Amino acid sequence: MKLQRYLPILILIGLLIGKTLYSQQKKQELIPKPIKWEFGVKVGYSTASSFYNLNDSIVASLIYALQDTIKHYTFDFYHTSVVLQARYYLDEKFKLFFNMPIGFFELEEKYLRDEYGYREKKKNLTLNRIDNIEIGISKFWVVGALTSGLAGSVRIPTGFYNGLYDDPNYEFLSDGAMEWHLETEIDVQMKQYSFENNLAIDFRGEEFENRIIWNAGIGIQTVPNTELKLFSEMHLSTQKFTNQTRPLVPHQEVAQENNYYAGAEFTMLFSREVFTKFGYQVSLAGKNSWKKGTAYLQFLYRI
Image (cartoon, one colour):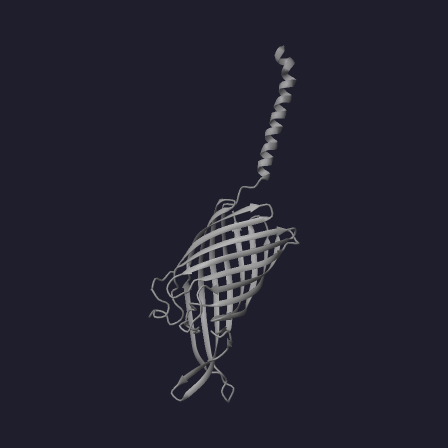
């Protein structure tokens, strides 16, 4: 009899406990699992048909001299890059990353038109290689509208010949050299605008001179999950240019250069898992560097 008296109360308590457990389960389902992995690919395509010499002037043709024969020729440089990417998040703001770029290079040289309008081909060089494999770690912090971050990585060449210019296996470019990359980032968010600054330094081996890379831009987020960024970027050698500086030669690596770029970048997050980025940048001025334009597309899948 006593049990029957308290049975409605027990049923009510059971219903309340069940509803609470069900609500907690639904709440946990609404909170997505943290992103742990990102896998992606970044494809870039660069072209150049002139370069800046050591006097900051643009060079669009060179002279080929053999005995009494002197001919002028032009050069077109092409670089296609496919970067395989992987990132592992130790937590939401702390990650390890891996990049493996595969480069496809081509240099096409042609003499100027003769009296009949014919352009004779001088030389065509190609090189396919795995560029420096990058392994690194990055961490960032968010305090109100301010985001700051630090990153460091090592870039390991797939060939280990010591020297850029005397490798008997490379008539065109080289096997690369070891690099150590350090980077810092500071972003400020103000309503639908963000002001983004990245400053990096590359410590490079062999004949390469160290360089500083500074990227500054403004991001505009007027549509949810998208951003349009307008930016400028500078690549600056840490060493002075002297009479001993090796001048740019089209078929060789550029060991020391300055370059100033401007560009635009559009990013879109299709879903929590799918991220894309498209951009283009063009060289506006420089010293001992290619005057080139580069388009790139990045796709990331997050799990």
